[in-house]
Amino acid sequence: MKKKRIIYAAAFLILLVTEILIGAFVHDSFVRPYLGDVLVVILLYCLIRIIIPEKCRLLPLYLFIFAAGVELLQGLQLADKLGITSQLLRTIIGTVCDVKDIICYAAGCTLLGLYELLIIKIEKKRSINNE
Image 1 (cartoon, one colour):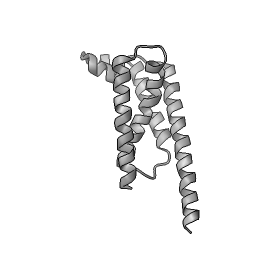
Image 2 (spheres, rainbow, N blue to C red):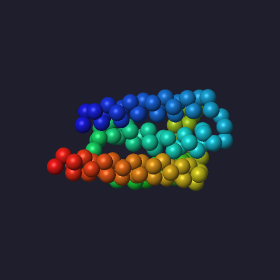
Image 3 (cartoon, rainbow, N blue to C red):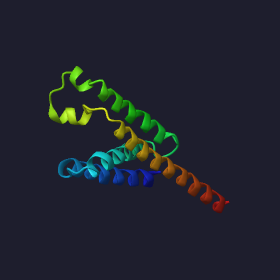
Image 4 (cartoon, rainbow, N blue to C red):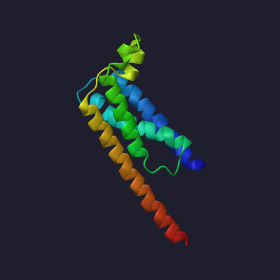
């Protein structure tokens, strides 16, 4: 279990640096608006898996619900209602609700769901071989 946590921590750090670099240096019409949103749910998945490396097979679904919920809160102008003026905080919270973002979160969570299925298949194969 410790090995899994280390792997997820390494993946989290790599994705975090990638997201920061995308945010700071990429100003295109695909990577920043779409790939960045796909990667952010994978980043959150890795962060949670550091703490809970196993079980919770529905984590991709829970992450999608969370990400979509945050996106919908952006549509309610949460940053404005809270009186947040810091540009950094407004960027983190978000100020615009976009259906395309929800689709990107769904794509990232679908990839995570496929990963979960692959892990289950590998674990079953290992348990059969160990019998």
